[in-house]
Structure formats: C-alpha cells, structure tokens
Length: 282
Image (tube, rainbow, N blue to C red; front, side, top):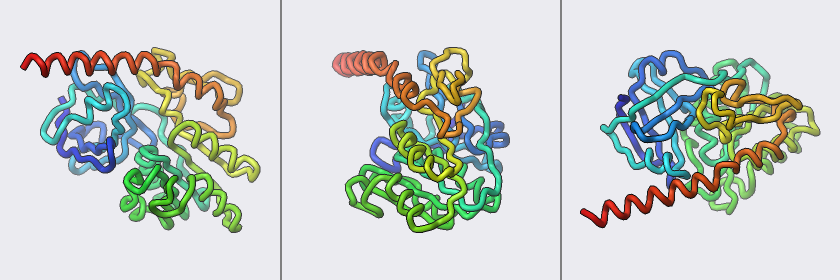
C-alpha cells in the first residue's frame, strides 16, 4: 500500500498526487513512469513520474480524469492509499547539453515535459518552455516551469491567457525570429506531437516525442503499445517512451490510440450504472 500524502486539483479534472514511495523516488530519472493499480479489481495504468523528493521519499504524479480508472484515481484524497505502485519503468530521457532546448507541453503533457526540462537545465542548456491549454485554467505548472527554465511561454487556444494560438505557432514564431534552437521535446496529444514534428522537420531540429498515450500495461506483455518508428516495430513502454519525432509513423499511432476507445467507454458506462445502483440502494 502506498499512502497519498497530498492530493489537489490543479486544473479542471487534473489532479496532482504526492505519494510515499521512497524506493521509486531514489531511482527514478526524467522520462520514466510507474504502473498504478488502485485496488484488487482495478486495471493497471501507466503514469509518468512528474517529480520526486528523495529526502521525503515521495514521487509526484499528475492525473487527468479521462477514463474509468483515472477518474476513480482522482476521487482519492490525502491520507488514502493506492494498492500497487511499480517502477520506475521505461528508458530515461536522453539528456545532454544540446545548446538551446525547448520543452513543449500540451495540456497534461506539461507534467510529463517538466522533469525533462529540469534535467535539461541541469545539463547546462538554455531552456525554453512552451506550455499550452485550451484556456487559461488548463495551463498547468507555469510557476514550476518558471523556476527551472530561462524562458516560459504560456499559450491558449482561445487567447484567454498568454500567446493566442497553438504551441506549434509559438514554436514557429521563435524559429522565424532567428532563434537558434538545437533540441525540441514535445509531449501531449498525438495530433499536437505530430504537428510539432512537422514544424521542426524542415529545419533539421532534433525533436523527440513521448508516445506514452498508447501505453497500456507498461511491460510490453500486452502488445497494445506497438508503434512504428523508422519503419520498425517498437513497444513504447519498454523501447521508449521517447522517440525521434521525425521517424514516428503518426498515422499508425493514431489508429492504435483509438483502438480501445469503445471498450473504455463501455467500461465507464457499466461503472456509472453500478455506482448509481449502489447509491440508490443506500
């Protein structure tokens, strides 16, 4: 059992958890993730480690309530427990002094980009962060990014805060201004990562994306996270989750990402029906 020391919503349906897990905290590196199982009947879900504190022996995960399990997880509060927490898993981010490094986070993807931005700064890079959301309330971790990055540019689709437009448009404006960009990390929805890859491709800027949206069991056993990179089949959870964006087959990745959508919807509906029934019997 792993105790939740702190749980708080930082945006609509997005919750930050600080969890007691000293062994994981001691070993984790930027880009790695954990497998979480809430209870004995729950499914196993992969979640990126957003931060850790080796002195306190804690890790931080940030969860967006989208499907059945993530919404159940976001119902947990400070002082409650998670049954299973396994990790750190996956290959760490490749970190070196590239020069000027841009970390791009779309929505909750900012939580995944944050630890790598920290590592890039520690490696001596001039770090720039572009963090996007549909509106101001969905822009997360701006203060945290400001603490570790040399420049931070919030963007919103509706123009309610920061740059009015997509993260790719802000990236393009930096390129057009003559800024020399040596490395780009993009994490978020698959269409966003694809758009970033196409933005940097003409300039030959080294670009990396995290394909964690397609991960399922986190061990490579289920095969649900198969992807095509450089015309070769990879298993995202064990071979990644980070890959060269210009070598990723995003069309195949998109089809795989929606493969379980119908089953997830059915599972969520059954859960809600059972919950309504239980409430009615009280």
